[in-house]
Image: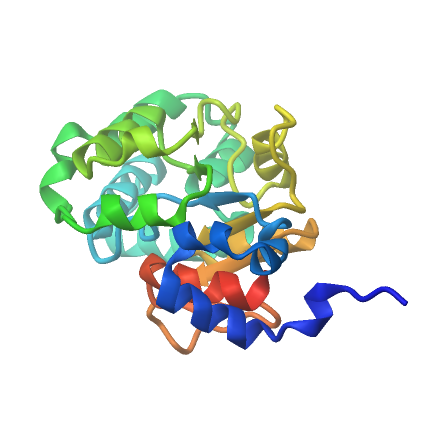
Length: 247
């Protein structure tokens, strides 16, 4: 009779081993490593995930400024409309494209992500070593511009740790939560939906990914936000334990 080791070893034990040993040491324990064969790749959102809120408050203010100008309304009215449309479309750019035949994405992205945005972000001296300790290939998937992603990751001194950056330009301006955004990440064939875990702070984006059959983790300190069947962590620093639970 054969047994599936995945059903024999409780996930809670694996989580404890990860906390004690660190992911990088698991290769010394072949039986435990079997549990992680199905997780070969980590896919990360950037803003409010790799670095925490409220650093993105300035970005959202600039989005409202742009929306106010585009609609020709006062700021309060524009913000109310933006909130409602964001619930429907999931992203500002998708809303613009869908309802206004908007074609000036480059101008929008440049105004929302100016170089001075770095002044709004706090450097995390522990981030690089933590990401290295995960010891897995990592990719960024963002609705922001490529210039924004590179600028932020270089500032945080972790740009070289990510194998690829899938920014909105590379997605042909069809970003999350559209299914094509996630599917494009796997177009190279190096990794699949099945062997990847996705981390994002946006519940709508996480839900869209899980509807495709993928495993995801919601990254938010807001305890009131819960998604059925989806683990939640306060920050990416809790990733090692949650990988043990879902592996």
